Length: 329
Image (tube, rainbow, N blue to C red; front, side):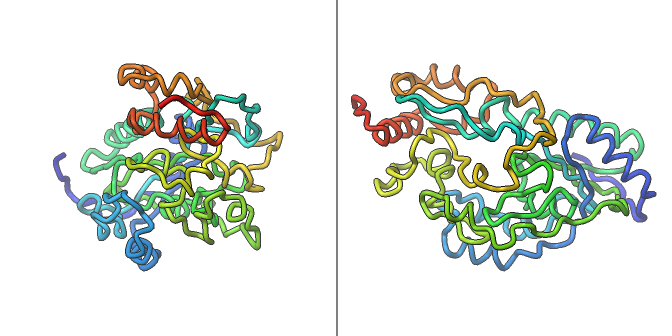
């Protein structure tokens, strides 16, 4: 992408408000403006990586300087539009019971692939901005750039980081997906925007409920996290951890399910219908019989394609064993 002349002075606050309104009108549940100051959590990230709590996610070891400095994402970056999609409403926090021989899917992966769904609308917003600011530069990200999205989202007023490390909004809860646009335009946060204080207080429900003890206050050891084990880990899962995975064949929602900020309420914001679940569970025997073509068909248009065939076979065997079913090898 061509670099453009730096925009030196902040735009009028009304333009920031207009941008946020455009984002909300395009279907995002939350939107706000953040600056590009260096991360306030660089030391904690360094320590977390040094303790190897990122497991085999080696890409987190790379570009740490860039990750801690969003201003370096593009030359002359000045501000970031942060947005959030709700993939599940607080009113839909309770799943129907599973039957024997079924495995649960994390809620974010039950519908359309959020990468494509969010990028399309962010690109449209960037195109609109180019019309008003033809000399500006932009970079869109949805899990695709070395950036600390949750910290930027907190700065943009989208919520606070909970003890389980996920972003929580006081009305919308934590079932949200984050994305953004970093730009050379110097948008300033509207006066009505404020950073949400931490409302976790003395609550430890997410920590107490985690079956693998992966969570300590404001930190997660990925090597124990069920989402990491079922989605990211390519190798065999240690038996001591496998026995605690329960019914989760892909991902895990336990720390969010027990959070009081996700308790069902009648006035909770609705989820974006593009994430309506096409399936919330898999038949274990069906998955165990999958070929590669079967896996591709099952994951068409889904974020679940990250899990390879051997991983899904492994996960299905673990869930079957946890349910007392002995699958054929």
